[in-house]
Amino acid sequence: MKDEQLKLILLNEPSPKISKKFSDHLQSRLEMLQADVPQLNSSKSMAISLKKNYWQYLIMSFMIITALTILNLHHKNDHLDDELSRIDPMTELTLSTL
Amino acid sequence: MSLYLKKRRWENDKELLATAVGGNSLATTELLQMLSNDAIALAWRLMGTMSDAEDVVQESYLKLWKNYLHFQGEAKLKTYFYTIVQRQCFDQLKKNHKQWSQVDIDLDTIVSEVSLIDSKIEETNKMKSAIHILPPKQRIAIVMWAYYDNTSEEIATKLEMNKNAVDQLLFRAKANLKKYFESEQNER
Image (tube, rainbow over all chains, first blue to last red; front, side, top):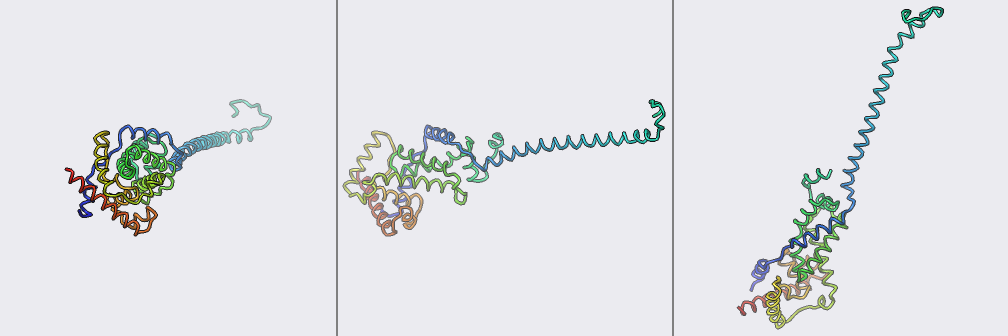
């Protein structure tokens, strides 16, 4: 018998396959070993930081809008100050004076 | 997030392994389907019984899980995992010092083994291979040669032996198996 014939016989011998029972056992055993994986955690932490940023942007936008509203109101009230400064202090202040 | 991962295909073996180790059951199932059958076949050929093979494969998976960061994705995950299984088998076989140091068997032993294996197959209906009659080192050498096309040098590296010793091992293993198959043919 030649080496190649021997190899052929060995390659044609049947070999076992994993049983369903053992495969299920392995699956549950490995899932119990679940570890903290940095690669996965980095995507999680990215999602968390995005959430944080979202709130930061929201607060900043609120502050900017508030500041603009105050400035706008202040600007509107400027002409009242001008009118008041022109009035004789002795004049009785009524709504019609303004 | 989990829905996103479930729908996603893994870009490479490294990502698949990391996702499985991270607890994604879909990735674990895919990984088990990809690796288990060949791992069981390799362990069974080297160890000789299914229960030993299952023990070895389970231990190998636990090692893979614990040391998943060592896998850098340069080689295929299959190759990497089968190396772990091989090492695990060698370690288990080495534990039986008497068997491990056994160099060879004689023709009479082989002929008696033929009938013993046949009767075992009939009794337990369990699979047996001709290579299981060989002493461990010969078995390893012949498995590496026949199923994985390893050269004497590669086998020598794995067994931490010199090439000449491996050549002798392979020569004896081949001779023993040829005798086994010839005696089996004569019995028929």
